[in-house]
Image (cartoon, rainbow over all chains, first blue to last red; front, side):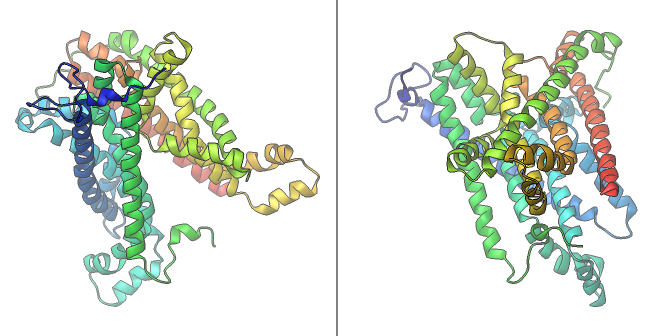
Length: 252
Length: 222
């Protein structure tokens, strides 16, 4: 088999090979289409990440509240609901079922619906990490907050969450990378992201191996970038002398 | 919710469309779990062998698989298998091979952690008894590693079951496809997604509840 990397310099309309690999007169090449698709992947994943972290931290914190059994139970139900339904099915629910059940939702763009689907799906996983992170803290931390006369909200704001945040950075890294990978499922509702590009460009050009290789490389590169960003944050916020509870393990 | 019409709910929907998909999803889960654990254990042993010629390829394979979305891996195999063997093998068989290869990477990480959780003393005890590396692994380390890792292995299997829905990308007939196909024929595609979600939730929730119970049981024994 011979490689044909020129496929990326072809225009999407008539397949002319452009010397610059860039289209002209409103026509684009497969290379430009792929970069555009990469942008969509990053936007979907990025927007969903914000929803996932905000919701996940909130739900995860609620699950650790003392003396609020109702809130704890509701937050637990949230996690079970969004964790036990496959992401593809959740995307269909947001994209097809909700707009049909509630016609007012038909005005919401598909992109946003997919972002919510991915965001809430991931929020359940993050909530689980946040709960584990808070519970991994020594009980004395909470008591110290109480002894200072802090309210529950203040204890969380100034004592528990800043510590828990550092504990959950490693699992948050892998959840963020998972979110990036899961955004590929958006192809199923025709979001013009990388996987959608791969499937369509493969069909149009029959150069599937070159197209898939490039798309796979972009996914791997993006996941690697996420990993490095988190490693950087982890180093920056490290508390000297504080050993992350999760890492030491064991003990009695 | 008044705009949804659930008249498509019937025994026929399940008997004619869902059952076939459910059967495939379960088969795929079982085969991929067993195959994934088998190859995953081999990969884990390669990574722990300390021999560069074994460590490097296994590490590249595992990290490579783990940095690519499953949907892309499914598409890759569906494209590559006919290209390599010269004929098409069908979406279902292609999906099965993909899942074994993909899950092996994830199971290998679980097994690696499991093997590393066995204290060195156990390995040394085996060596002191004159066991070969193979005997030591087979009779001492792996049985304990499997046991320690059982809840995690089962959780991964539940995730695997949920992931079978992604064979949608190549049109294989799984549980979700069964609901969707039936939904289209009975004139309720949206409703069929909702029923599929309920079915998935019930399956996923009861399985993970079972794992939780098992975890408690194991924790008490130890």
